[in-house]
Amino acid sequence: MILTERLILRPARMEDLDDLHRVMSDPRAMRYWSHAAHAGTERTLRYLTGMVASVPEAEEYMVELRAAPGRVIGKAGCWRRDEVGYIFHPDVWGNGYAFEAMATILPRAFARFPDLAAITADCDPRNAASLRLLERLGFVRTGSAENTFEVEGVWTGSVFLSLPRARSAGSTA
Ligand SMILES: CC(C)(COP(=O)(O)OP(=O)(O)OC[C@H]1O[C@@H](n2cnc3c(N)ncnc32)[C@H](O)[C@@H]1OP(=O)(O)O)[C@@H](O)C(=O)NCCC(=O)NCCS
Image (cartoon, rainbow, N blue to C red):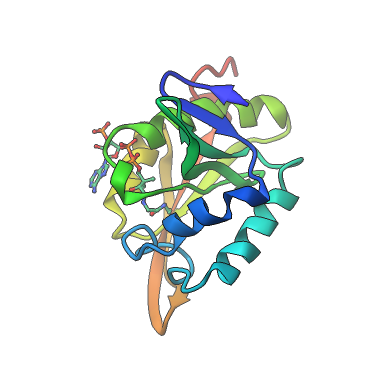
């Protein structure tokens, strides 16, 4: 478990199903995600099962508020070694929580995997909040592509970003 100023970051567990479903069934939160909002808990169960299985090798965490522990407000980190993934419930957006979580997790990922040269992001070009967050974290744009994801019959593109080890906060590289 990791404590930041306002957050508790801890590994995913199966008991998080209802809270995670509350986030991943919300069309606002899922608007720019790589798949559609979860219609039923079975879809979230599949997603959560994958998260729990990858706990030993991923710097990925469930997020709770220190002021209101016991309820997951989102998840943050790297869903695989070198790629970020984060999502928070819209009720808590705009408070700096995503930045606070990711600014803590990214240096840990670099420290944990010494061979990791950079951490990447794949972001929908329309996702202003995520692009701004990544920019604040030190990510730089490396390219873009059209038609990278099809969600419910609609194709969207990607902006690719990278955080080289040397640009990570606290890096001594
Ligand atoms: C992206 C997301 C995690 C940001 O969470 P958050 O806790 O609201 O972000 P923060 O409060 O830490 O804000 C980070 C920066 O983004 C900016 N920002 C937040 N929402 C914004 C918006 N709608 N438009 C533009 N900038 C925005 C903040 O102002 C802040 O920048 P600043 O410090 O220069 O002011 C949240 O919007 C979310 O869960 N979205 C749905 C899931 C998603 O799209 N994930 C990313 C897939 S690539």
